[in-house]
Image (cartoon, rainbow, N blue to C red):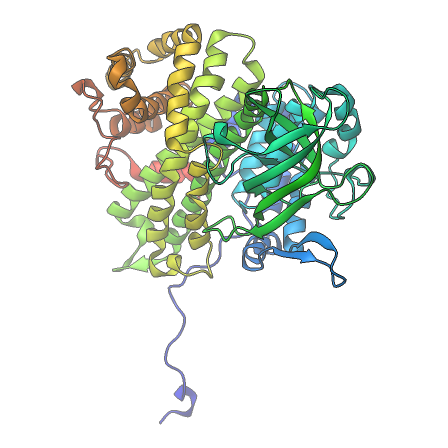
Length: 565
């Protein structure tokens, strides 16, 4: 027997090297163009720097570490004191520090200028390709700012720590910290999305209460994310009003003691494991009313509008991350004598995924501009108020199938936890559920189209102009209007179809305006062809899987545009 061969069963060959040390920003042609188009060209240098920093091996490792070493809750000190302390792996704090360094928690508010929202959304998109759980407290902090700004006296005490680009890990009253984070507490056991069933009570502490008044809260929250935040915005009932009110509830009471918000347990979640979500009880917790009494839902909805946009961006980022991993794998893995990326059917799958990813990217960047321009024109208002919930429904929903398809490109290697694909797949469902499930979003689209009828008409008029020369796009728009304007008794049951078609048309319009013709044509042919049947059916409805592009399209060119070799 050859001594050198003893104990050696095989050489390691045909395994794909880890994807690292590339630039998340400059490798994404659709994003680069959108940043310039939506008024954020001044931020290109920062995005380029960050795009390179986020793919170094040391930074990539943070995502795996933070999700393997999940947060731990200690309810009591060794002496029996109630502390409700959360311990995170150092990787978590490094991720939060990276996010704050780029100003992604406050940029449009702390540094207002043209394109600031698009700049922030592009940066958020880059970081969301790295790790998802760390985005939750950052998103809620960001979304809380426009709500808290409406309370000038309170906001003056919050401005400096909210806007700070430092990440302060200390568990102290926010008045003693360099920076702070804000969470949100809405849902209770009996209600979920139906917050009208909330039972938590708020009782005025002296005086008559009302806006800016101090209260003590008694009740619970079934999802309280993230409990380590320095304060939360919470919904509760006052005895004087039928509607819910909104309250600012800090982690520490004004006297410096820990506020009476007791963490009962942390949620054991499918994904988003690096982030702590919890159940809490309010035992006479101290809080301040934000907004008018009984107007808590409209107050908190302002916050939800921003968090829903971040759900769209986070899902689009999962698509992008899974896509580049799939393309990289296919370019390095051989089967049956050729690289996977050179085989026609695999090219079809990757090209189809590339179309979906680019459509999601141009959509969220257009929505970013709408958040700046919503007050300027009815069309801009429609993008923000009508298209955003539809996008939240559709893009988040598509991400589930998308990440599964990208995992399949990897084969068995994608199904194990050592690589990133399993984590992407476990993360995919959360954005469809948080901040309003699919049905809630679709019903919101219907309400918005009815309440903002002038904005909807302005939007559709602009889309008719874009549909010139694209029969399938024009037919889809006609069919959408017919479905929406049909029998009111059946409209609610058709809400998902309406929201789906609305988003697909919006994406097609944006690709017609801004993408190369072969990209827009392929998207329209495979997402909107068939809309002229008058029944709302078509290639985008049930039954279509990725990898079914017509052979007439240049699949290799679509893949090369998505992620240059």
